[in-house]
Length: 200
Ligand SMILES: [Zn+2]
Image (cartoon, rainbow, N blue to C red; front, side):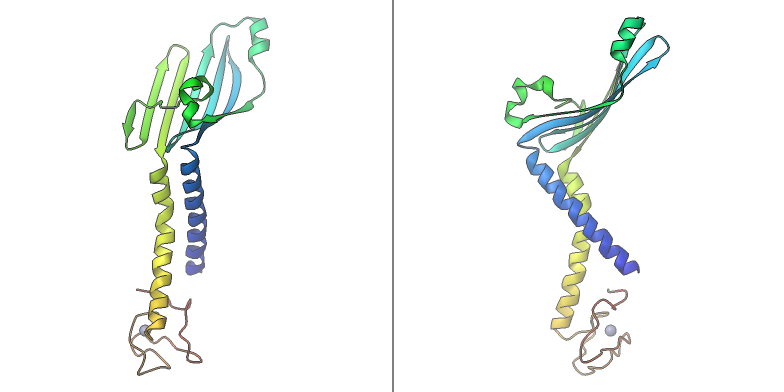
């Protein structure tokens, strides 16, 4: 059960790792953002609140922004308040400087470290909180489980090929029925593969 769960987790992790790699490559060609904006009324004000996922070369960012329209009239209220809406922008990365306005927060962070970034801006009616993460870090994070799984598979395979116990690595050429070291039973001359509990 534990083994099955860990195999499942490794498979999911591998999928995420490959997806990250694809997005990483894409981020050097296309940058953009997906925005969800929901304006709502607060007393006499209208607050535009947005959640943003944005991409810039090598990085992905998350942002929350608020813009407050103070003391709006009844007429403005009608215009400003509407149901939440999605919008999406993308431009070729090479075009960025021409179309900067089309993309939220490209190069936004004040604090940066190897692609990590953080930015907080609060002033008047404005509020922006931005977090940026580098694709390399996300890629590495998702690569950990698949790498461990690969190591396990290679080790088991290597032991089978060399006629060693898959569970403990003991040389089984002299005792082909049962491992004298850890007790694993070999059926029909075959070493158990997945049954090998606690591979070390
Ligand atoms: Zn053994």
